[in-house]
Image (cartoon, rainbow, N blue to C red; front, side, top):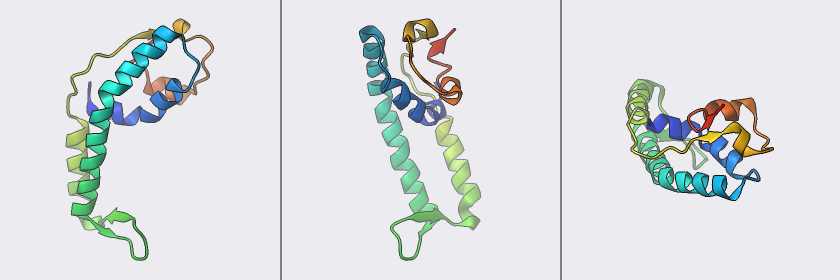
Length: 117
């Protein structure tokens, strides 16, 4: 699994984990989220370091922005990082086993590696 898939599906995973699920589905989902969370945290730490490296603090704010002249280098670093392979066991859930969960189409698209027809 690529790190980018984990990063891009964080909101959808959170939405799914907040739905009422059977205990067995909730258990498998919780184990999966617990396994990928350190990868996500490491990504955020590195991304923040790169923003500091390639950016400048916004005057009168605590926010940092990547400088336009450094954007290509920042994007290259982020693409390389998001393309990293992550070794994790991915559970597979049948959509019928999820019960009456309410997820958006975009959540389902982001979770297509977990949810099978």
